[in-house]
Length: 215
Image (cartoon, rainbow, N blue to C red):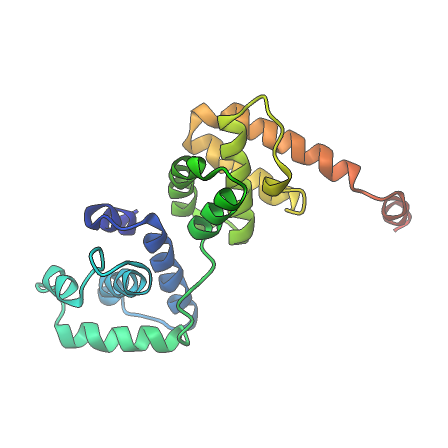
């Protein structure tokens, strides 16, 4: 939520916030950090994400970061943690992003006008993504399908936006979260889960059912 706020104030894409959260989680999965330095780590993550993604006009500068943390941390401490962050990430600074990939799916399918709706949905879902034990791909594809069904409730999901290969439990998890965050999407969530459930049943082979029953 904090990173999304920084992005809004700076005029950055929400993708920067997601990327920053990705850096934050990956760093903490490798290293421990003192509680007093968590805020500094957050700033370094959003700064690095902005450096990777944003254009020069919207880019969050190191000077701006140092000004924001001036009362709590020194510029040398920030620079030291930034280098440690890059090292922990092993220079892998372009993680899979539901914002970028979801937008690409919509544009390639000819439905780029739905991106603002997708972005709003992802803003809510991705704020909760730390509690989701599902992949970013599942989040992306399910949210794209939800936005389509919400926008065009009486039209079938185009093949280009299909979620047939996504695990049903992942679809249910994302739909449940979206339903709680956006009550107006309840019908769309129920419809996507039901459609995916029917597809999942249709794709179960008789052989696999027999094998399961004999175990």
